[in-house]
Image (tube, rainbow, N blue to C red; front, top):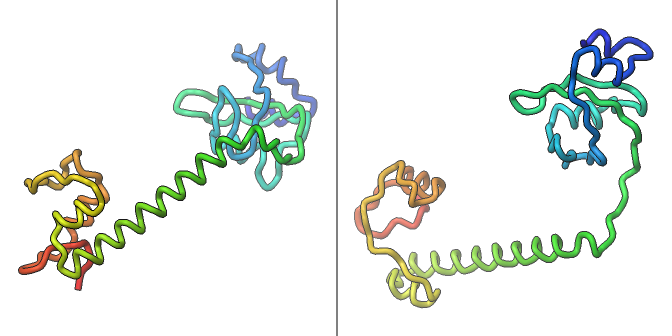
Length: 171
């Protein structure tokens, strides 16, 4: 199949019939995002948009997409990148800004809480100030799925302290 794809004048329709392949069309295959039903498959992205992009009218492939599909492509058109209309991207931009603001606020609150804990304020007082509740202390194993992996890893690599509470920073 590969050698037939590389022959001058190779025809996708002839190859699909010869090898009894399923055909389909991807209306738009976008750099970085791909296109349905192929998704963003990186090997396909590399072939279509790589250092030597696949030229219009040329065939490319076969490329493994997922665990069970080989894809051959024929590029019908390359379009220059275009700015999307604001109406089309507005909701995504607003969501990204809100998420970033929430992340920034959470980080600031965590840093303030940590500073208060390190200064000697009780855990219960800090939790009340933040208007959060805390579960009572309990045994947590290294593989406990109820605690995020990053938290477990930080706790289990932190040095054991004899007198003061552990805040994740080693002295």
